[in-house]
Picture (cartoon, rainbow, N blue to C red):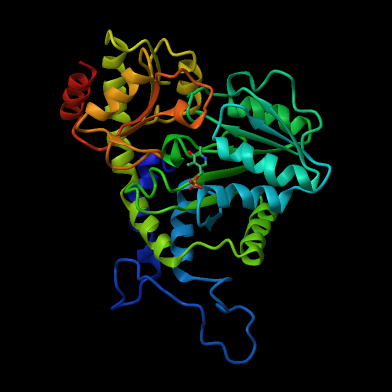
Length: 367
Ligand SMILES: *Cc1c(COP(=O)(O)O)cnc(C)c1O
């Protein structure tokens, strides 16, 4: 297969080579520029730092390579989601959002879309096909949903939503393009927080919008240029560097998560577990059908808040933190943010540590 995830990974690190002149640096230069040399007619040239930056271009080239679609870079995942909402929606439109997805997306809709006359409904990810899509301008899916890890069938949602005249947006943060490609399954737009696994080192916030619809890309670019929600060149440079090793990190993280989920499932201290790779997970058949990997996030429920906090604090190889996708394994008790999950529910983000060392530390901390 020429367009397999491994073919994309192999070519990704050689993309720059095509444009290199003799004597050019092989790695990507960081270009910090508000001004460009611009005498005479400005058309067709880099003009101003809010419009153009060669370091953005480089990160967009590899994001576009991974998505097989043009991509527009943003300073965070929420900036990418905001760009999609504010560049496509107008007063009177209706939006469908997951009730169990990333919390801030719903708060953004409540706080800033609603006053502009854009209404929204919430629906559980696992039941996304129930109730149809009539009357929606935009249908937003997040699968696996963060933090509960329920899935929805992207191809089936896209077919039904398109028949109802809606545009389908998929938040692909939990999987990255190496784990799932929503555009190939029929979604119109991908949004993602590259803050997570693509950056990979927990030192940068970043996001992108990708689409095969030229009008969507043009609108996202206009939004970025006019709203001023532009990524910093250094952040773009860091994410470019992160993307060069994403495949090897993602592979390790997903493989380790499969091993650890199987063992946690048998552990007496674990009351419930969600991981799409487990044969008895309610999402397993769908995961096999639409995902290339099962991801690196595991949801585990311990007996109580105390048991969950104690486990996270005791484990030498778990960093207590919000966010996920870093090289270090991290975890948090999601009820502390008010998510609709059990008090002892922990979202575990499996990192790049050697798996047997990681398992020993987890087993010891579980006691
Ligand atoms: C983290 C996250 C976001 C937001 O990303 P930021 O870079 O923090 O703005 C959006 N969606 C999902 C699913 C996330 O996990």
